Image (tube, rainbow, N blue to C red; front, side, top):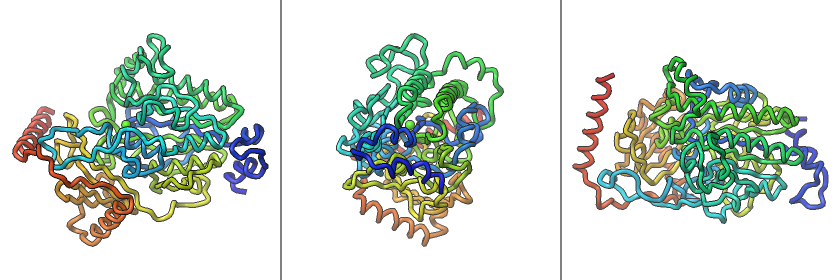
Length: 491
Ligand SMILES: [Ca+2]
């Protein structure tokens, strides 16, 4: 019998008095879900993905014993929309969380179009996977960054530690944390990443006899780059890597990894490791000024691979055989995956854009079927002061839609109708735009993208921004390029 079937058989076959609340012994056999979700954590920020400076031995060990996805994507290049997609199982045009906040970003004189503001709160009418799991008898908790409303509890969580509308710990990684739920009592000197790991261990201990789902959504490694003080000297003394060398970032990452070690130790101690499905993922690409996704182009905020391709693996000894896969997955897939693992019903009248990864995880399937992946960002994200080779030095992203189908990826930028076609198999760094060389393929992918936008009713910004000033924009681009050239000379 396939391992998955064996793991799920008991609770499926045993009849229950109340379908929503399975009996106690039956519940104990259901898989737990531990979802370790990092913020702004880059594709190569772990040892197993090749960091030459950061240390992640506990995460690496889980990855080695799990199924590693090399082509895993977030649904957006920055925090709030990525999270809204993840929790709802829907692409951005459905829930309309397009950006962090609803205001326009960057200099008004440099924006040709009026952006689509969308909303900053996930519609509470949308049922999340957490709520589905609650209905199925799971004990659910969120620990860390929430970002989608003032309070995560109504969205399906019994326990909330640290979750608010804020995009980070309000005053950094050390207390006081003000009125943040669950963190008001933080003692002086307590590093918030350590606290969240401790809370995770406590939650697992308290719920060892029933199925649980823990959304451990660390604030790390989002700005402020608030080093864990005890670890600074260690990384200051360490030889900088060619890829990575940021000391504060290294301490923030080690704190996460140490916590993962403590959590896994607790799972082992309680005999829960075998049937706990551990998911490891990040919400968007790494923060450009502090880390590097090389050979991927770009970073957080861009729709090049460096902004949306994420480290992702699933470790679940009872079901998942260790290995690597290049089958593409995307954030919206986790909704049906979690629900299928938990035996939870998905709401029949609510659209879902992802597919369950379970057949692939269990080895019952070798792919997820032919399907394009989509991104839609009808807004702006201003550039950092340091810039890579992006479309222009003023914005990490201008309004765009993206599709990946097979090895091919098409970007469409709405301001100028710009099209960029890349073959990710041969050009993972998106260095050679093939749109003009391959007009038929470009047209075909554009059709796929436009058809999807029409079906999902995605708003495309078309109204000119009255504040746009072409001369000011050109001058700013020249100035930024000169500044960059000057920096290069100094090196
Ligand atoms: Ca983020």
